[in-house]
Image 1 (cartoon, rainbow, N blue to C red):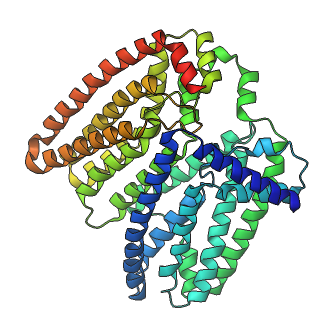
Image 2 (image 1 turned 45 degrees about the horizontal axis):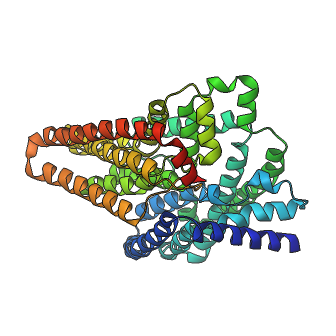
Image 3 (image 1 turned 60 degrees about the vertical axis):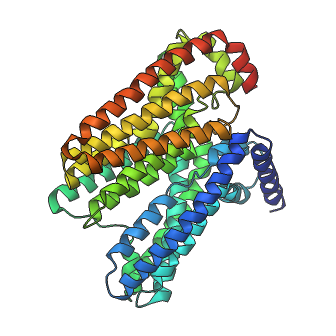
Length: 465
């Protein structure tokens, strides 16, 4: 255990040195994250109070949805993992015992402040659980399911890093999505959620309590066994190189793969999923909630767009010279990957809005998302070449740049809400004009940035090094 403590200590020091000695954007993002977490947690406590009141009155449907959302978040244990100094495969080079390696695998997830917010979120979720008729049983089932979900997430993360299991993991997720969609199409209701055993245990049904404990034990054992198995297999990238030459691996797929690992992207996915659940399950959803949250999603993505070369580093820029692509092709690939990773979730949300509020609302929300995407890419391409920064997060831009981006996002969101409220049936026309204006600005910024990158490549390379 001594080596485990030492490795965690050095992991902690390496992480915070990277943050504190990094660019201004890293510190700014950490401060903004702290302020948003403090404000959001106060609102979250109010929501938990309302859920507890409903549960005490005998209505546990909202509690079931809340617990399902918490378990889903726990299935994503890679919180800020890409920013750690040592990854799972790198740790395999150390002469650690199986127990120490697994302990490092688990405890290193809690180095980042992002994980602290998740822990606080999960711990506060016990409050409404205590309102069930048998709070001791409910708490034991909740903690068991939380531990099992976290362990299952670790196991799935390990399996998805191997060439043999990545396809099976993806097919499993696709199968779950198809089954849930089929259930909704037939029953017109939410499918059975994994949080129902917690509710049943809280109502005094002991078999469900024993079932949650057994399920948690199975998931923990699966995570224990998956780690050494993963370390003995080839990662998907190695299989890709063996199966086909590097020229066939497009720059776009590489960018999409890199961006999908970022915490900002995964956070936007979680927010989009929560919005989708809200639009589906709420009896009277508020249209303004989706309009405002589209702006919040844009804010999460702007830091990535403002430093599109941050994930590449000097070695990545040098590899661009070996590829048969122009500077415009490089920017096009990066912009497409950004649009898919961070804004494609607006398409199903717009479809749900059209279903709940009508085609005018759905079309307007989609046009608002397009305008925000064009605005982020236009400003992001400019700052990416003028003020690039080195960093694994990809986040960039100084305080002034981020302030300008935040103001533009706020004005665009307010303009969309004003158009939807004040122009009636003509709102899609106004938002289409807004999207076209930002689209024209994006094309101009794209042309200028790609030309500037070709001229000032060495200057950008020195800024990133």
